[in-house]
Image (cartoon, rainbow, N blue to C red; front, side, top):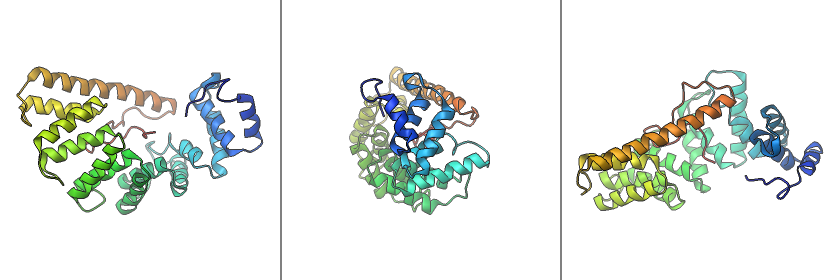
Length: 274
């Protein structure tokens, strides 16, 4: 959401509407307080307004109320409450919440793991056009996590996510073409996928290209200079992402030593893709 003070909205009117019990206004006011727009930074007030909107059944507010806490280590009441709000938002069809709830159920973060239910929620998110969910689902089928291993289905999920503009999905397609996973092996297409994914911002594609040039794979001549450049870009982006996630976690009092930026599945585990 983008709000330009004094142009896109009248903050005083939003405050009045929020106090009058309008859920949409309560959500917007929470957003203003959380993000410090118009000089209103106050996380406690943000949660107050998100909670009011959540209690009226607004899924976006339920998701925002849950997001800072469901990943927090420990089995405390706040975490359990967050997962409860996440489930409510998911049940109302909010794709970001469906994706995160699937992640919770797959990993058993704070609740017993349930891979079958995890697949169901992530599938629902993917079918609404949520590209990161389609990527996640692709890796689940590729690796047999939460679902029977099915390489052709994995490739179809990656392809759909790539069509939605997800560069990590394009990198995953490159892997499928390179190793013939779910599709006929095609080294030329694999290389093109890696290059296009990197151009469009994929972190993993830089690692893939580093490997390609290091070993002289996919019909490319070995080139240590290019390999080093791609590997270094990969590391620099991860470092920047780590700094960003640690700053976000510090804002909510979360530990800094349990950040998992990018697992082998190519999914960003540090925060939700919004």
